[in-house]
Amino acid sequence: MWKHEHSDFTSPLTFEQKVDLFYEQTLGWQLHIADLIANGGITFGRNGNPGDRVDAIDHSGFAVLHVCLSYFELVGSIALPNKSSYSETFKAGARRVFPAVFTGSANSEDALQRLYKGARCGLYHAGRTRSRVGLSDTSIIAYDSRGVTVCPKLLPKELKAHLDNFKLELLNPTNKALQEQFVKLFDKGFE
Image 1 (tube, rainbow, N blue to C red):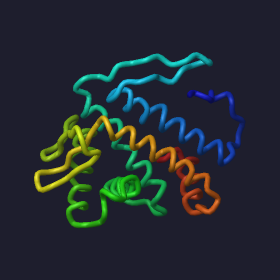
Image 2 (image 1 turned 135 degrees about the vertical axis):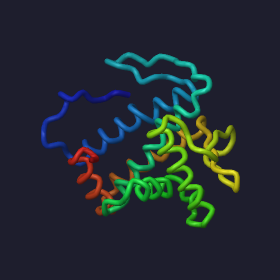
Image 3 (image 1 turned 90 degrees about the horizontal axis):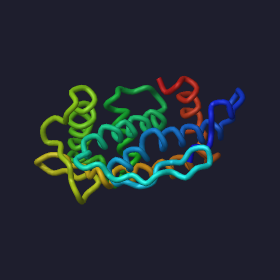
Image 4 (image 1 turned 90 degrees about the vertical axis):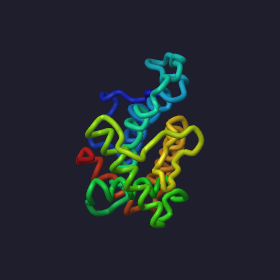
């Protein structure tokens, strides 16, 4: 998978090179790693060599969430034309990744808030989720009056599929506003 070394590029990067680097870094540094942790599989090879088979890591569900949840903020930061709070950026990304789950209803907004504060902020700032956040074996993301649950085995696979489609969206010449926001963030280092 690793197709590029830093020395492969000369400045300035083309738009397509920026998108490729964004895609490869997000897949290779984050989403594929989370998938390997949760489900096992084949690592990306190096120097023309095939990758190695690795087993899933038992009891790794919350670690997988820890790796995956920042993807929502990444997508939200590209999708939102104006700088917003981390909470709004996260929620915008989650809505874009899972529009059928986060429909805009009061329940889905409560679930987004719980996913943001309870899972994302809990894991990043306290090393654990807050109350009413749990793991599921069946639904990627589900919520009810008891809280929100996430399936760590399914989430990385869905995010990888979304990343594939998001790359195509970025490369679509009719998406000028999305492309401009992406380039602005890419050039600033996604600060």
